[in-house]
Length: 222
Ligand SMILES: NC(=O)c1ccc[n+]([C@@H]2O[C@H](COP(=O)([O-])OP(=O)(O)OC[C@H]3O[C@@H](n4cnc5c(N)ncnc54)[C@H](O)[C@@H]3O)[C@@H](O)[C@H]2O)c1
Image (cartoon, rainbow, N blue to C red):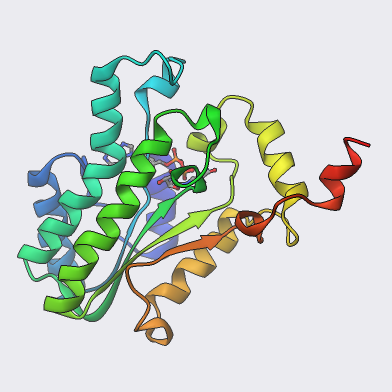
């Protein structure tokens, strides 16, 4: 946890390790967080994704279904488990905010995104379905942010990622959103200025999701 330790030092935070597929670990995470923070939690970010099929280079058309199940559990069901623990422990403050990160392959075809596309569709659905109960019962909002392709460990694991990120950059009127810009946008959803935004999948992608074609991409085909 080298990098995490550095981050914790810089931000004066404590790290509580948790496997997000384990309800027991998540219960410990939520309980310890409340102890350290001295009460209920204002905001939570789920920023977890992993496909074993992508790692093992199994094509979408020929997966190992045990890997499919594992990736689904880590990338999507972990969000349900986290929401479940927060909900039943009544751990969120009123008007608190929960966000998960997702990608547009949940709505459209990106062949090399593989089974992560299905996992993200499931994740976004959980945000809406559980978000209803969280809003009704605890006045807590639940949203997903659909981020541009971003050069990170998971991002670089996607086949042909460089071509893909360049294409997206050229298609987006504002260019790809960086990781830092994603953090900034996430903070807006944690602020009291977005109290009535819930059950939404919000695109943070420089405009990519509403584009058909851009002049920069057209030029490549002339
Ligand atoms: N990089 C991109 O292009 C991109 C675009 C849109 C959305 N996202 C999403 O952003 C989020 C963060 O991904 P990233 O790009 O920073 O990649 P990353 O690989 O750096 O982050 C994934 C994180 O998931 C954690 N993780 C994996 N299995 C876990 C488990 N069982 N329990 C707890 N944590 C576990 C890893 O420790 C890692 O910190 C993911 O949900 C990803 O799908 C990424």
